[in-house]
Length: 263
Image 1 (cartoon, rainbow, N blue to C red):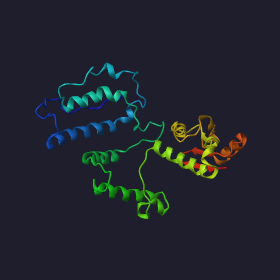
Image 2: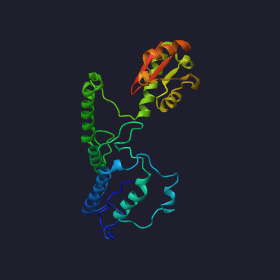
Image 3: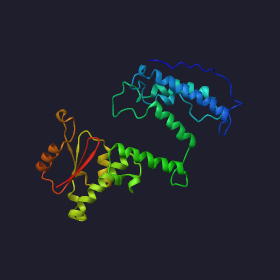
Image 4: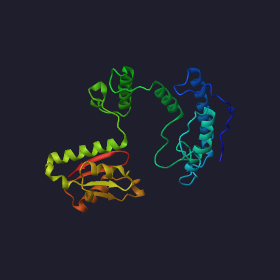
């Protein structure tokens, strides 16, 4: 395993340590150290085993039983991160990491996060920070254009909306599919709705099904194969539905998108 070269000299900086925010120059000094530390990590990240080699509860043996009473210098904190935290990481940014989904950030994105954190904007409406609201609408329209979304999905086309995580998006999709079918067959028939999903989908879909009122026995898993790139193809979905003779149904499959089919 590679190790970070910790070149910053350990020194007593108690004069700089306060219980409030750092003074600008001390913030600058410590910020440079954190950037150097992170850059060193990224420079040798491929030398670490992707999967952490520690055993469960390793960290409790290394840290104090209670929170520290006295402040510690940034040098000590970074050394602790190097010695105790990095060994317990699964290195998602490593070029050797191929599990779950691609790396979630780039070093350029990391700098953007620093700017965002530094401003610490709470943009719940326009007045709270006009630039935050307006920048979000502009950039989201850029993204919509790149995805070739219809104009009515864009802020500039009287559309727009909210940013949601995966779990919230799945619940919204399920609720829309449920309501679409129930508007046709009557809300009293919710017990007849069936959700089909591939065996490759995330477990959040089953949880979302329960949230929107789909009975657990109506949540059915379809096996996928390499021949279809492990996708739930329309052909497989059609055959499974007819074999099961489920009618009416809501059928959602997931291969980095959701499809809603009704019969």
